[in-house]
Image 1: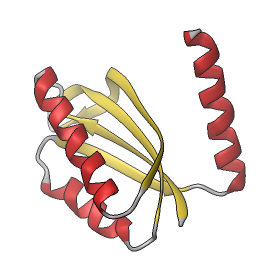
Image 2: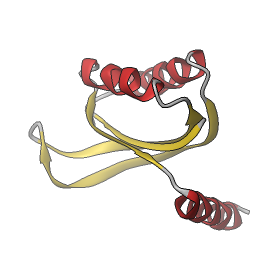
Image 3: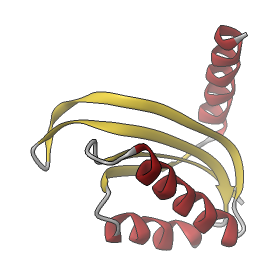
Length: 113
């Protein structure tokens, strides 16, 4: 199983319930395909560097997970089919990126405590 990180941006006009529903849809999709979540983060509403679909902001979410490689193609197809998703990016993490992500999560946890 490979280690992946996906960041996706949801349309800013969505309600809180619609955002939660969209995030749960993608979580359930991954778990149904045998993926194991390492971390999930809600980054909230952020201003975009450039407008996408005439929108200047979006709700950012990050998934870090372990999954077989063949799952990614169908996962990204689901993103393309969902009109609530403005952009997405999935990257396969190497050992240095995994270590960096762990340090970043530890730093975030220290700030929360």
